[in-house]
Amino acid sequence: MSTAYDDIKTQLQGSMVALVTPMHPDGKVDYKRLADLIDWQIEQGTHCLVAVGTTGESATLSMAEHSEVIRFYVQHVKGRVPVIAGTGANNTTEAIKLTQDAKDAGADCALLVAPYYNKPPQEGLYQHYKAIAEAVAMPQMLYNVPGRTVVDIAQATVERLADIDNIVAIKDATGSVARGEQLITALGDKMIVLSGDDGTALELMRFGAKGNISVTANVAPKAMSETFSAALRGDFNAAKEAHDVIKHLHRDLFIESSPIPAKYALHKMGMIDKGIRLPLVWLAKEHHSTIDEALIKANLL
Image (tube, rainbow, N blue to C red; front, side, top):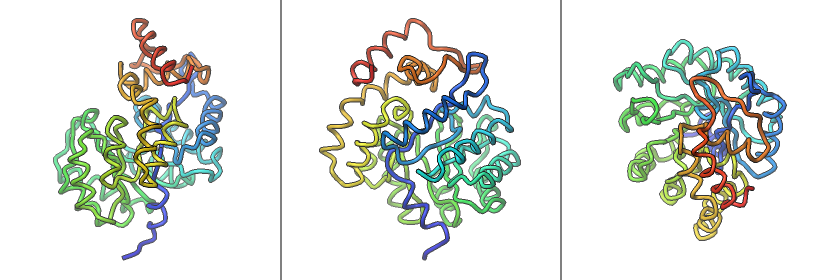
């Protein structure tokens, strides 16, 4: 049965970057660099932009900053690609407020990370997502990343949530291809499944995932776009060829907590200033050579 949210499901595909939030050395958001990054990503073929996800340091932006950055994305992108706004929180009321702000700003979809730290049971997760979906009539995407949140959205809970019309997708960052395949089979056309794990994303697309929300795409947007465009066409030989050039980045960009290595890499590439917010710090010196060599190997330096 068709719904008002069918169109967005066709747009949530391909290479989707979870973009860093550029900052000045004093930690203030650098909107000039952010505009440049957005333009570069679109020019390089990135299919969707994720504003203020985990990689965008959502945990250390104030709520006001969070909403302002999302507004900036929408205003600067001007409809060139979909904007997915990270609006998750472990406080349901705050998540509703951020999601409403994202809708008011004109974002195309909200990305809602599983509530972290307070470890809700599955019924709590269901009621959390149901409350946000009922409060804000916009497309919404679940985000399951138990390695960060210490809570795991069970498949049965995802299946229950798939019956809510405006919950249209899930970002599966478990890193388990087998689990992702089970989700794809169970959900059918009710919900789009996207990978949130660079290392296994291409393999998951063989089983029907529609794309990848990526950290690696921050530094290698063209190669990631070529990889996932080919995969969408079903040409996995071409996808693998493009992917092999940059696949080592999936490991090296996590040598310290993300987005620390990605920010260092973009700074090394001359694209952002040396800014990050506590409790994150700049990449430790002993890891600089690892990232430098990874960028050279990927033909990015």
